[in-house]
Length: 315
Image 1: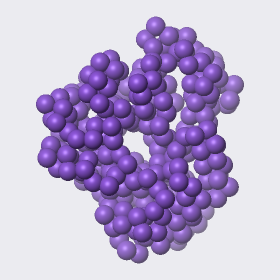
Image 2: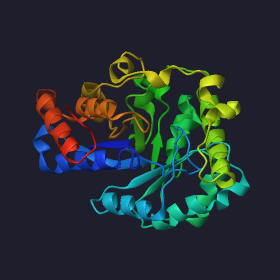
Image 3: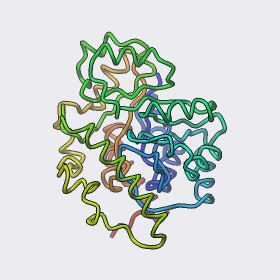
Image 4: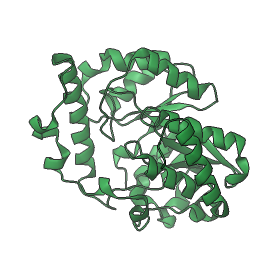
């Protein structure tokens, strides 16, 4: 049995995830049956191809190389969240994103895609990358979801509005390449989700333009109301904690993973939390991947190791 988890994020949570991988290697008895880390997903800031979540800051080539090496040397692929839906032809030549692609082009890593334009560019220029179809596409029709799973993708991230709809899930083809987002924070059947993804895409373009025009000057989002989600959408979902998310109809419990999804043929599961805090991720990692009877001990060990690594401060 393989239960493959895709976890966030290789930049914001770089050291955090390395510590967790160390615990998986050294203390496998804490973990539920078959748990594997199939990838760490995210984006290096300030990637303008990034989508799904806003990322700020910058990093240099040295950090990019360090992160790629740190995970790939352990057999863990990186998957780049290049899901900005509003890219145009001019954005394909972005030097920073292309530098990342060149450095990570070793046959191990992948790209999560949303824009047909960028997807075609990557297929042409970087054919060595495994491609994942993004949940950002908002494919909620069962027949369209089935068609997506028949296409040339390594993985298809299912729209989480289909989670727990077992009549639909049972009929999907190629279940082994279908990825289930288990802890989505977004309100089920949200009518503004696609608009929100477009807003995030505009933010990334605006942020990158600011860095070019005003290097060294902090980005003040209040001066850009067109990309300020607090003013445009006022989305409350982003503030939900790990326990509030579990009450949503789209939430998938760990018992359901092992008792329902895996027996049906699903084996790919995504944990959300690229921009979440450490406590959010600790709770979700313990909840989904650790045996219930081992969670307290594993949490204590994990937090102790995080503190020793300088990731968190306890007490």
